[in-house]
Image (cartoon, rainbow, N blue to C red; front, top):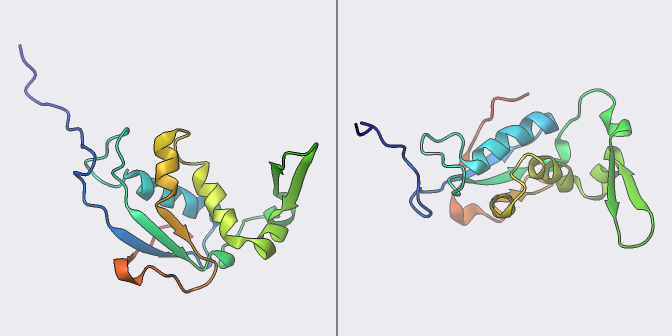
Length: 148
């Protein structure tokens, strides 16, 4: 017997991608990052396919006004390797002063797949520290995410 239903698999370029504008002011970093990662991957669509880019573009403004819960501003430490012996470290408060958009970008990056598709998805995320962005030509729709 033949199965009566077939599983739908989206093909590359078949899904129309939209542009969304997200205001990060007063949002908790982890909750905001998980919502953004879901939209970048396309999990909010019924035609989601794991191995195809079915997600949308996201422009985040006011990234300097995100919040952490608890004492994470002083206790959360970012480390990275420079090529020289030893690691560089920086607290979340110091990173907010230096490059505030990197806080949200790293949080989203760690929630995406760790492969070629994940790197492609991360390029569709545009983060800006202030309220201005250069993507008016794409006419991003304001998106209110259901996170605090």
